[in-house]
Image 1 (tube, rainbow, N blue to C red):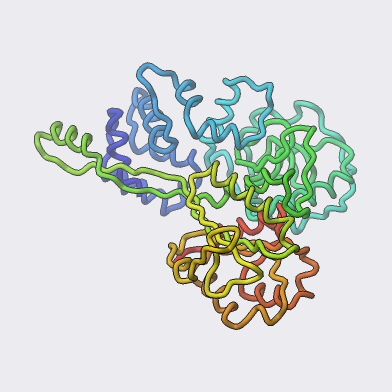
Image 2 (image 1 turned 135 degrees about the horizontal axis):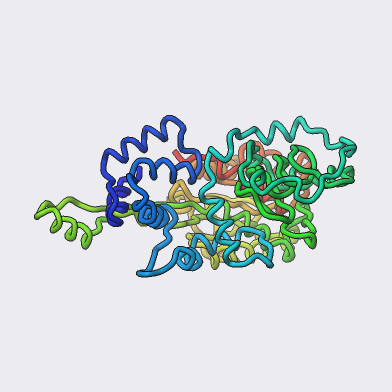
Length: 441
């Protein structure tokens, strides 16, 4: 881990070697590094020895961990503004349009440098959520503006982690609480307010929560509500044109990072010359974001006609926006030893060739799974089971309303061994959460 780190920091005139890696590993094993901010502080203590090292250290840290490169004579703010990680952060966050570039960069750096010293305790948000009473009546006095200081909002004493919960659950509970809330609140775990550990509000410590207005507390909330004009979509509605972009944002959640170690020949030569002819290989990591997916679509019959177009549109958008390896197959009702590579179902692909794809592919099957019992033969069931066994990250998205699944015999059979979710925005979110929990052997 971090094998190329010493070399990256030595380029900036800093002392870093194998000992640095050993001490960093001990820090990780002892749980001293939980956030990127922790990593910054630990490495700063290991590598720097005088204030003159702080500037080069910060520059090296940003280059290595955030891929922010600096041009000669360039200011920190300029390098951050043109970096990819900062642009992706701007797209992900729901930010106040009135905030200046300087304010945005400060907020970005605040989130990057958030450490365990700022969050003294991380609580189980799911437990808080389950034990909370949504019917609680609002009898508290309203807080005044400025009652929570900036220091209290920035240095949180506690945080709660809600990242394992779906946005659908949080939004539904937020609507219930909003019915009873009469005043402004701050510092708690129940109401929609500021500075607390409630999963909805702003300026608080809610990992994976929902931000409403204001500025965040630096815990990477999902922030689906950025201003008072927001109206949440109905996540139980079938996938369609007006909610496809939300579905696309969830699909991005399965994008994975891969790293290849490459020999840096020019740097190996330069370092060898410096060392008087002792040429030691210098390696560098090339990181890539990838999304490898197999899409199997039931495009036969009238029941699937309304959904095929929007599904293909969704995955077509995914194909254009993300680094990808997307392969699409078609079938009617179920598969019999293979599927088709064209929508007209003329070019047959044997199941053996589909299974020959790497096991780390994400598999999405789109179909209502509702057919005559005789169509779902033992051979066809074995085909589906072989797909699930080959690809641990496989899900079935069903446009048929979930309440009808138990009345359709073939749906029940397939659902017994194939993870199945409704073809809705909320269903897609749950499917992505399931995929991210799966591990490829």
